[in-house]
Amino acid sequence: MAIAFGHLLRPVGLGLAVALGVSLSLGVTTAQATADGAATGESGTAVVAQRVKMYELLTKDGGYFYTASESEKDNAITRHGWTITQTPLYYVSRVPFTGGKPLFRLRWSKKASYIVTASTTERDNLVDSGNFRYDGVLGYAPGSTDAGGDVRVFRLSSDGRWRLAVEAHKDSILVKEPSWKLNGSLLYQFRQAG
Image (cartoon, rainbow, N blue to C red):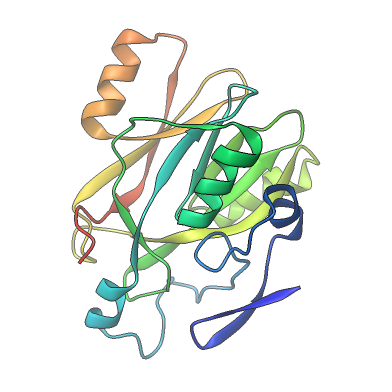
């Protein structure tokens, strides 16, 4: 199965698409980024037009799910009963851009719990462990403030659950919920859609 995504044709993470019953035109797609995550021929204006909101949902298994697709978010809520959280997250690009890095989404095999990474090594190690299924590229995030990043995003973990948080929210989680541990800085997000 493949979808048209801009000027590229990319295979979709079929398992999730079937489970959610959606077309993932803005969500997760399997993509091969160049070594530095930059696209050739993408202008800054085109990237601004491609920014999409990232959402965090809580699964019925108590895991966290991330998407930058309105239809994927809506179907996760209506078909699976997952709930959108109030976690402050901002915008990523749905297309590669200069200074941008892909965010990879993986599903844990033991329950509906998802991890997001910007590391191809971590992605490959998780898949090779047999404990995670690779869903594809969630979106493209600025690798630095020079690439347009306004808000630094961190990843936290707690007993088979992973979540993303901006700095102020990360600090609040670590103080109020001591079971969460800081995994480190992931990348950045855009504060505005365009």
